[in-house]
Each structure stands twice: as structure tokens, then as C-alpha cells.
Length: 203
Image (cartoon, rainbow, N blue to C red):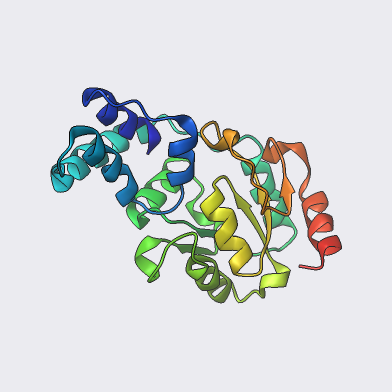
């Protein structure tokens, strides 16, 4: 999403600081704050419908370049081997999430996929996580969330879930002080160590 927005901003002559964008990331598939930045820059309301169509079209093109985070496939495989249920709680649109999963052959790996359309409020509200826990038939203290945005961490913690923050290239500038554990990469630890950390926390 960031790359498509940065192209739109560049065309308008707007430069957005990394930390500003990092704080928007993860809250919505179509964050109003992103349009607000343009409104303020040009001094009038922009055509949000036209920009949304343009952004989505470009985002689908860029999606083909996306790759899973290092260590993600290994964690998913280890969880499946251990008989653990795996879910996705995403503030993005379902079509976007499913396309990404299908492109990388990961759709069948997940027992539940909860997206923006499934809840009244997206992150940082806990709704997505509460819905995912319900779909997985798992209690919050039995779950571990892996998040790359501050909104995601806030949502997981609000739902009572132990949360591991794994910043991406955009969000590395943020502190993630609400996360229970902060790692540079999913590949940094094996699954058993994440589980042990959650058990020690009492979550």
C-alpha cells in the first residue's frame, strides 16, 4: 500500500515523512488519514473515489512483487506440524489478502482469515482479533499475534493476546513499546521460543 500512495503523493508534489506514514499503516484498507494529507497539501478536498480506483489498480500491479517475510513460511510449517490452528486478522480488504495468499500458495495454510469486511472496526480496535479467536475456537491467552504495525499491536493487546512485533521496512522507525516481544525478523527465533515467551508472560 505504501508504494502506491508514495507515487500519488509524488505526483502531487507532496513528501511524507516515514514516521508519519508508519503511524497510518495497519489501521484500514483505505485510511482516511492518507487522503487528509493530500487535502492539506493541495488546500482543498481531493477526489477520493478517483484516487482510490487509481491506487487499488496500481497496488494490484505492485502486489506481484511482494514476498512473505523471512521466516514466515517456516513458522507456518512448524505450527501446522505441531497441530496448531493458524489465522489471519487483517485490516485489509479480503480480496487483497486472498490474492496475496493465493499468489504464494499459502491460502490453505490458514484455518481462518478475518478481514476488514468482517468487523465493525478495524485495528487498533480489537474486533479483528476477537473475531479470529472465535473462528479458531482459541482463547486469547492461548494465542500469539505477529504484527508489523503499531495499530496491529494495539489491537492484539486490546484483545488480550501476547504480541510479537516484527517491524517492516516502513515501521522500523517506531518504538513498538506496547509489544510483548520485539524482533528484527520472524526467522530470529524458532516457534518453540515464541511459545515459551508467551507462556512466561502469563498471556
